[in-house]
Image (cartoon, rainbow, N blue to C red; front, top):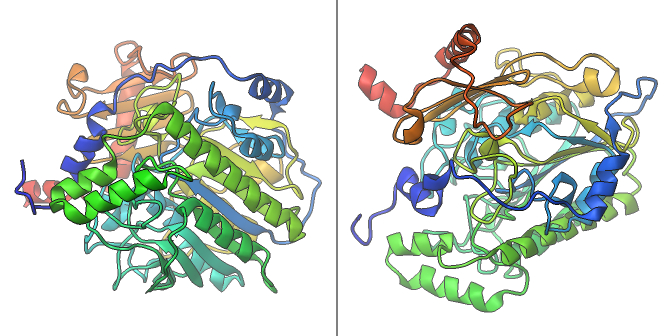
Length: 489
């Protein structure tokens, strides 16, 4: 064990709070509620309404934290009720094969902010960025916000940033006009304390005191932004920390006080684990947190309606990676930290009343960097030609009836590789991470086997070779991990 005041490494901390069970099977019931079954029955395969026209939309990206693929009732949760997110899906498109840009917080957020693979930046090699790290998104790197700002958009981020710390890194240094939220990966919802005992709620780069439940605070601030006076179209990145640990629902003030006391009084290593709440939470507590998130999204959508901007606002809801201890990803396997489906496939919803009809479902594979490209395209903004995007715009598919873009979806972590092409998923993990796979190339037919149980590599050796070559070609253009650099030196 590390000495009492020694800070846990990212990998040791991840292992302590759940990375070691990343390949476990989530065995919750498959039954769905009557409401979600009825909603699914009304869905039809996606088809673009190609004759529609509109002005440049406002852009609202709502990002949940550690929300599993089946944690919403419209995605099959048997016990969590999410009427507001179900309504959002019914008013637009539900993507069954939506993916995060990575299996942990910081890399996915970087892929959204830049539209590029996390491994193109030094910060993206941190999985995730830990407290007091000196790395972060370089302010000179073009971002969704900076590119939209050049195109005449007002830009705001409310909630979790997790892409670098002050004084060198912040949303306002990377193109957002305003920021209200937290810099780190996790905080106690009431006290706003992090694992290294910092208070972590800021307006811009100045601490802001508010000891109410964080989900409530973010919802209020987002609603105020939406209903404010706007003479230009806007981008709002609304990044909730829900349903990330600690497992503190609204009203859990006694448990919040207990955790606050532990964080302040325990040796640093133990304080870190206290925030991870290894002795807390339950399926019911997790349900309360997700249902609180749902109510919050409902409040934000009502603010949007009151503002008169609902028709002309493109809304996307997603998660930064798969769920953790109490999450439901059935029938997928794996969870946060893993490149198995349960670690990267996430609930994904789009609504844009002016251009996209409701009650639709799309089975097209999409992932986080695609939304960066799509937002820029919908806004008439151009990527920086010197920093090309890895995501692909979906506007042709969504708005003009074009075929969905065909390309490979690529993921990389220090211990795993994955690539999806059509229905096929190529995956390899180190032997230490998945001992039963012996560090070998595996292949899965996701249409027939979303649980990734039947390895088809021996039946399709040519396809495995093609997918491996595609993965390695992309990987060759990315930055090497520090350990790899040391080996190559």
